[in-house]
Length: 156
Image 1 (cartoon, rainbow, N blue to C red):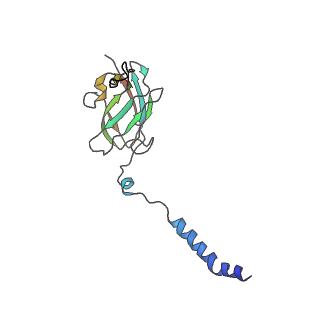
Image 2 (cartoon, helix red, strand yellow):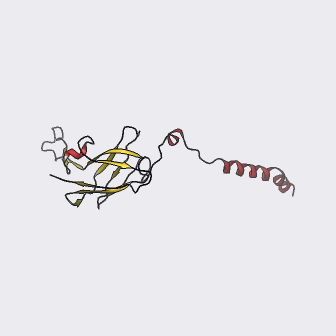
Image 3 (cartoon, rainbow, N blue to C red):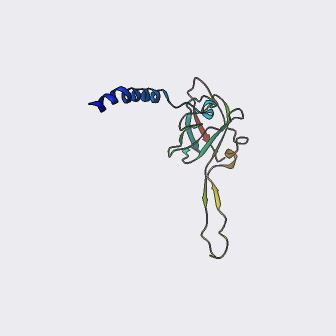
């Protein structure tokens, strides 16, 4: 009986205080999260000569935005931009756009004693689209949206 009364007198109130302190200690954003620009959902599709482009990297470029929103296209050519976390979109503003799809292959060595052969890079889209300065692709992400962008690329 005496142990029970000691618990009731000392431990029970301390456990209540510990729970109250733990409840008040929610995670606060760190300095990097606080510095993030607000993002607006943005998505779209990439087509080449009328065919969807899968596994292409799309990057939105704006010198005023510290990190470039980007995405990888799905099998149907669709994408959802990511600036900080998946599908969060992009900050409001005007962007130049680059789109690239490459694969790398290394041929098997012919001589086991020789250095490995160089990696061959295959470009599946016209190279002009890889550079935001030559792509000719620009967009405006707006507060009101809908911020759905379709990029119709051409091999011509």
